[in-house]
Length: 185
Length: 269
Image (cartoon, rainbow over the protein chains, first blue to last red):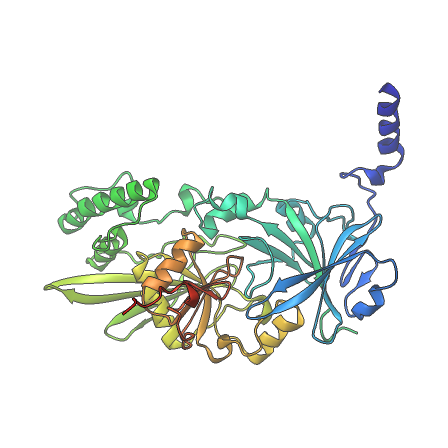
């Protein structure tokens, strides 16, 4: 037992990437790119032999589309949604393993993201997409956005958006989403 | 993110614990009734009960007090910015068509709060009804606030009045073709022939109300042909498109409630 504990301490001490709070987590969250998946590429390019993929139906405003969840080794689950032509338009990740160039990652509280990206803007979704029941997203133009699930605090703040904002600073981001702008090459 | 406590409540004299009794006898009369109704609303809210339909809301009485001479016009700051609270929000414009007054206030986050005060005579007594709409900034339009057609705006004012003067928040109103395409391109799955394109629809939530309650208020207000609860972030979709045959106009995730097959069979002859 003692040996196991020493081994775990050794792992966290010398390989900080294993630690959730590690400052040395690799940079993998970029505009239109997460963990080897690139927005704008054809979904067929990712569907090679041996790729572990789950396909789900995602509800839209009046129609459905397909969502591909890639189970990538050393990375976790990365979701990709495609447009009608089969090109990846949106990618998301719900784990805090990786970070952006500035050091932001999934699981960071809103106050930290605001400090790292003061130019970001907070929005409410304006059309249906599969997200939390109640939530906001903090959009950073050069990256994408971080999503916040406010479902748990809605009751606490009386279903009032303004009141809920008082609790938002401490709320942890639940997802990082990125995409490719149409005018980007 | 600033405080949302005492500093952010309505800065009206009748809400103050140090209300100056005896200064204005007319206001005092309203104040007594205002406190009574406010207590009733709080008690009902604590018990999770709906107010009776004939309940005279405290916001209505506040409206009367605003009509009294000597009232200093200040708008409540409760509907201010999403990113920052604007404690000094000023009225951008006031329009008065003789029937109703409309105040327009721009908040710090770029959202716009519209307040309509209208008067009508009921049994010889002048009544004031207040409706509030908050147009939220839209990601698809570089953060500009959502827009509404006049007819939809009036319907949402009615809904706000029906909900006791609570703010109806518009997440999406009229969408241009460019905006709709932006949403599709960003895979937000907007409908290609969305009723938002012709201004017949709005995606709303009501401040301080659960989604279920908002859905029922929108349906019971009788202002909309179709009410759909997405049961997700977008809120409640309301529009004036004709409803599907055999449905009552209430949907959840676009499944009719009750479904046509739930209809009881006709009695046997």
